[in-house]
Image 1 (cartoon, rainbow, N blue to C red):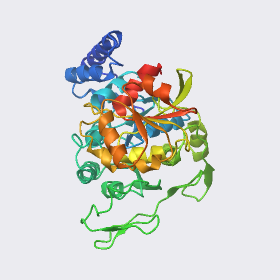
Image 2 (cartoon, helix red, strand yellow):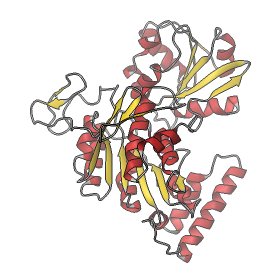
Image 3 (cartoon, rainbow, N blue to C red):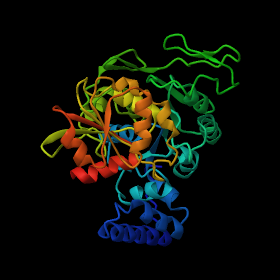
Image 4 (cartoon, one colour):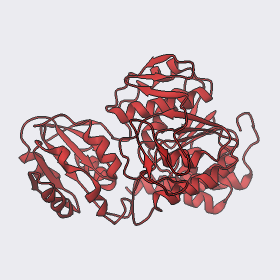
Length: 412
């Protein structure tokens, strides 16, 4: 915890040094940031390194299917009002990447850490967090990740009895089920646009009732808890009933929800909502998400959507028709190789938009759009698609590795 000034052991120092050297070599070879390979080497030399690096920090962990990178960035910005922060800001969210991030800053007071859903319980054991933020759970990477009910159960078991303050989304039944094993939970009404993974009760399997914004199980009584924080339009309501305006440069309802959860987390660390929300305005883009770039004389806005819930939120924030849209989908190991999730996305929401399709799995996406009765063209490259797009800012929506490919191509 913060205030412990015990120096790292010689073994830990060696592990940190070796990890940094390997990461630097990876960057020099043009193989990315090197954070993952550097972290793996460091952990091989000292398996307890993550715990050693976290012991001097007040840690907050952020986990979810969607929004965790952005929320991590918002929380980090808010906590900088109270002291130096170290964070895995680029989204390397498994133990190796987290270890690399913490090894890069020995002067921080706070550690704001994004964690992959599958690794949350283990990272929580290693880092002894003061706060854990749980935003949502939905289907994602179907060939790799467990079924969402199993993930919720893993969270529930892993967080049982945790000393951390758990800041959890009261509108997601799976998150509520997972967080309910914790003795200290702060509930946030952050909303839930995608509901298709939460129609059955995670407690008993019964059918969930969803009148309005409420939800409950008519069979076992499991129900939505009363939130103490809430997103209300363009404001965050705090536990005292005060309404604080949200001013973000990031677009969309989902990011207002992320800001509401971030304000609740900041309050755990003593940062008032007004200060936290004002600092969040500084965030213009997150690892390329929402950036507007110039490419071939056109404005392109880069949007990341990795699963059905993410695509649904993204469709809600793009420019209205007839704004042109480019869609790009890959199915590499980092994305999940199963593309059946495409059939869960409501592509009729793109009606009226000229659509261009690129990416490794462009033909899979083309079949899905054909069934959805959408008008589209398929291209082999981004360059060709941009050349054929009608006038107007182009909304470019891509899943994870497709998004990284696009960023490299446009020089972002």
